[in-house]
Length: 132
Ligand SMILES: [Zn+2]
Image 1 (spheres, rainbow, N blue to C red):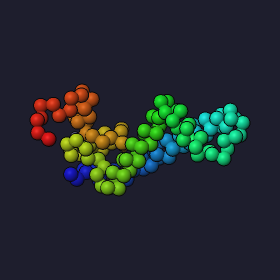
Image 2 (cartoon, helix red, strand yellow; image 1 turned 60 degrees about the horizontal axis):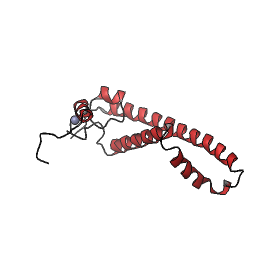
Image 3 (cartoon, protein in one colour; image 1 turned 90 degrees about the vertical axis):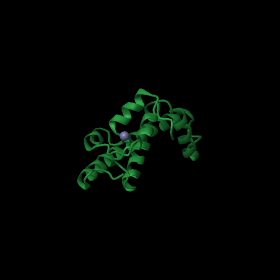
């Protein structure tokens, strides 16, 4: 259960995640601000006191779109950063093998090694293994 990443590799991946985290955060923010402006203009200023409520509504309204993808990515990055802190980053959550630096470079938020990811995408994970 020990990640096979060197401290240098981990640092590089953490930097990529940090940068992407800020980018996604800014994109979400900009998208919200754009929507909020339109929203506020529509309502002729009457909701300015409850900006947070309006934001919450907007998050729901915009749920299925661009923003949803970004919020999911934002959460994935947060989880990856938490795994780095917990020293479990870079270890496949399914089989416990190292995920591999090259795969993490391409997908810094990857939770599984490639064989497990492919197995999962083919569906029926765990079929033929009766034990828990
Ligand atoms: Zn695996």
